[in-house]
Image (cartoon, rainbow, N blue to C red; front, side, top):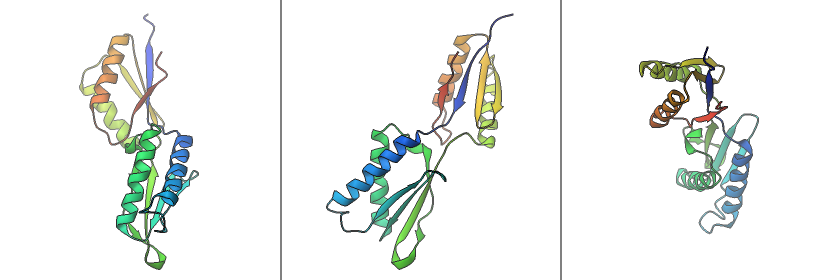
Length: 165
């Protein structure tokens, strides 16, 4: 019996890096000449895994999101990990935009990934384990082919490949 190799497909975000990026963006808001006195704020709610941008106008909110995006990219956080909602009107004539941080693979997407791997006729087994997928097979070359296939696809969330053994 051949020993099986395996790896996990996950979608995780380092919340400490997100926190650092939010703090850097908030600092830049107080220093940048075009955003200094605008009253725009950016906050992170770690427990709910959301980032909230409050600004006096939609245009300013989009500028703050761009600043935050540049800080996230510098810290190695994929922008696909943020799902920005619609602009909402807040009190005092301001606007608010909330972005949810995507952590884990949803069940529907996990089933879709599983089906796409099976449709490619790879000689591997795929198991859905909560918010991740475990891919196992007898040959490392086959597992590497699955990783290459998944990197080519677009799922709207960043995928990482961990526990490769």
